[in-house]
Image (cartoon, rainbow, N blue to C red):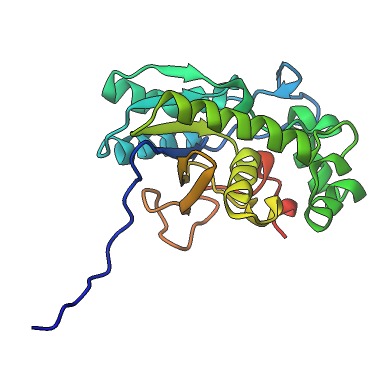
Length: 242
């Protein structure tokens, strides 16, 4: 009988860490006359009702998986997105400050949405230039890459042979996927609200297993404004999706 060889599914290498990067649910609308409150300079909106529904759907999805640890950032929309899952499982969340969203300088406090909507020239250049710091005072790609890489390394070192859910932000997810793949960060700026992106970290080797999984959200592949996950980029500034 001839020897045959099956194709095999990916298996996590011994000692590696699976990290599920969960983008927070949709946050409350921005009012240009009433900026979001700030935490360490970063806009800190709460979840919108749509975002709370998305958080419940994330919880139902993740509850079917073995999750060993949970991380959130210093910004409340990540904690509010994680809350239904924590309530289901009894897990507690650790805070990883370096997974907080990219700092937007003049675009903070929800102002980026207004700048995009009104056609601000610098906001319009975000997607074409591919750098956040075209906005005055915003964080550089180099600084964002350094701190987010360090955060992932800390999480992986703390949880070998484990699966971790990290509730984080769209700009951070784009940066981490770029680090894993060697791609351009703004090529991955389209992570939807409440989507799940899956990294496997084994030392210096990072493997992207899935990006922007929205199978747990309504709408299938055709997500809509009223039925599915929302926009690309930090706080839904769709201009950043080239």
